[in-house]
Length: 262
Image 1: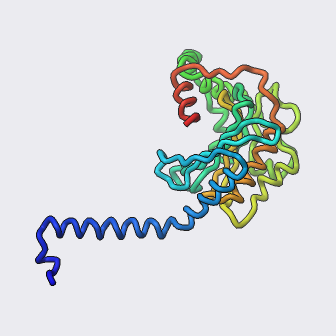
Image 2 (image 1 turned 90 degrees about the horizontal axis):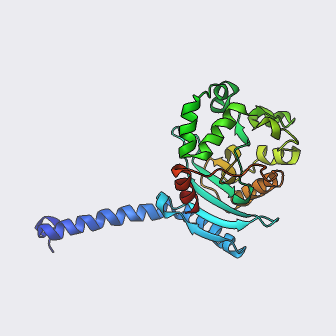
Image 3 (image 1 turned 30 degrees about the vertical axis):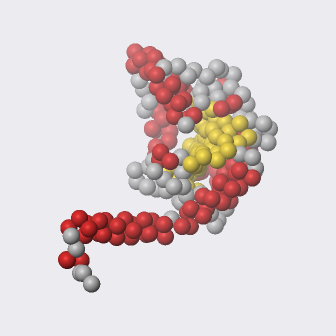
């Protein structure tokens, strides 16, 4: 029987390559077995409800997916799961839901009460008029966001625990009924144990729709997906149609629109 050193060089290289890739793919399959099972559960449950499930392969993440569905009131929504975009890795994954029918100018936001969204940071938004005109030429959405950051006022929910964790921001003319009432605040604050823990929740409106985002400690399972959908749908019921027309103009907006459609 020949030893490895007695094999022809090309055969030896082929054997080593086969061993390397066999071990690599074997370990990958073993380590991702649980997540692949969770992903299959999400796919099967979504399709059983008549929703459209797609894998977002371009992310290079086997847990990244897109689901197209509909709220109980008949509004189409798009739910996506993806990687964390935070450099400090304070969360591992995020779920984002978008309802295109609630699109409009940027007029409200629910954000974590942290340094990034502090009143001081908001107050530092100051851009010369000429620069704003140039930004608006490239993206109406960006121009609307800049106006919002400059003009927005805090609109507390009146629920002390929620207001200690989050800021609700709105343009002065939008400060009517609170966007978050007691039962919705309770759902966000009391994220269920056992699945992916909630790091933070965000929501905002822009010319592409109403967006809700959950930043999670781990890739979501089906229970986390359905809970997030319930939270997002309850919030959407409190968001009136925008009184201003969505301004999706400029090359940047067209690119974002194509990206969101993918």
